[in-house]
Length: 536
Ligand code: NG1
Ligand code: ZN
Image (cartoon, rainbow, N blue to C red):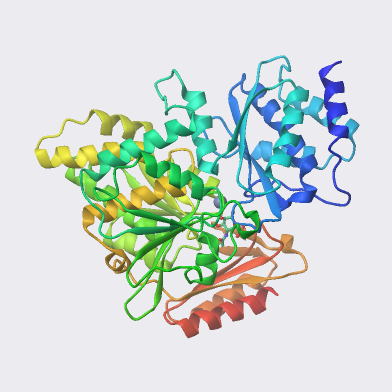
């Protein structure tokens, strides 16, 4: 049977749901799991084409819906560097997902191959994994059917965190090159992180335990595994794992996890942490993390992605100075418009580092961060990482320290280039990074909170008739259309102290999001309501 006929036959077993329009969004396809079979199947075809278009490089497919409810699922593709799929191919994935018939699908498959001059006999390799959702194994089987039909090389990594799959894709594609990233196995991931963590800690011991809420998702079992590779808790870092129940998939992200904590601005109700206890929460696929604590008066404090970026940037700037590399390494921070204005001010004025703003979506932040030698990027919601340019990596690796103090700082910097996931934001790697910084500074969460005072802010979700009329510019900080909206927002902003506000169409939900910040809580709330009324 020809490979086209095999695809036709296999596709017939995975018909699309009727009347559903699919779109590859900021985080891939994401919706109710029961309408995703055909989409995941078709993503298999796209992944094999993408792999063949790059001469057989390995492509990843991750089945997850991150912080969404348990009934949802999703699928996203990973490019050979371990970064997210490039935008032009997102459009191909959307076209394939929306093909009405099996025949139309095969015609599209042929057309894409022709358009991109893909030789369909090129060997191909697709690796995939899933989070702990109940629908994951069914969807993985749909994906496998597609890969078999188009004669792809397949490796099923079963259950992994999203960043672990990105790590593996990067390892496979760099194996045997100068850029070799690590062993392409789950064990290789733990070994790389744990040995870098040991080197970066330099025998420092963290003060008090860290409680990690794993959102009852894949981060739980994976963190427990990672702990086995870390130094004994009484010598280094004591991690208490909570909300790691993956046997009841219905509990995933429910009243716990990074998104719950960030959105509701409180600890998971199940939390047993005491005053000043350092806590953090991962999201459902462990690519996002936020820290928090409750002070002695019982007031909850969030240490979000902006704080992680500020802490990491400050530490990296110190290390590059102390190691004698400050003159040659350009360090910068990339944020979105959702970053609290106080964090931007702290990074620019106190740390004297460059800050850039990009549209929402980590692929934009990641891309912008590549313009620095050390690019720190985080979304306020806790998704981000630090990337080192080739130039930075080479200089950090080969620099000759001129004193024991320089040597000390250099060794920590060298370890951080190994500890921090270079492919994508990674909650487990980010957590170890934060722990290294806090241990070296001798800080608890209060000192970290004290680096700046957040401006009171409010995020409002506004349901509109058609979000597509909301076209933004200037890294989504200003609306071009509807006409008249931006001048009205400017007027409202002028009336409050330290006011800043913007409205933009969500890339993941059918709504417009309004963000406002100001000197006081009352002014921030009032500004958010006024701007929401303008866009409604
Ligand atoms: P949208 O729905 O486009 O605002 C949300 C988050 C992003 C990002 C994406 C992908 C906010 C305000 N927006 O995007 O930061 O994480 O989801 O998951 O948190
Ligand atoms: Zn996630």
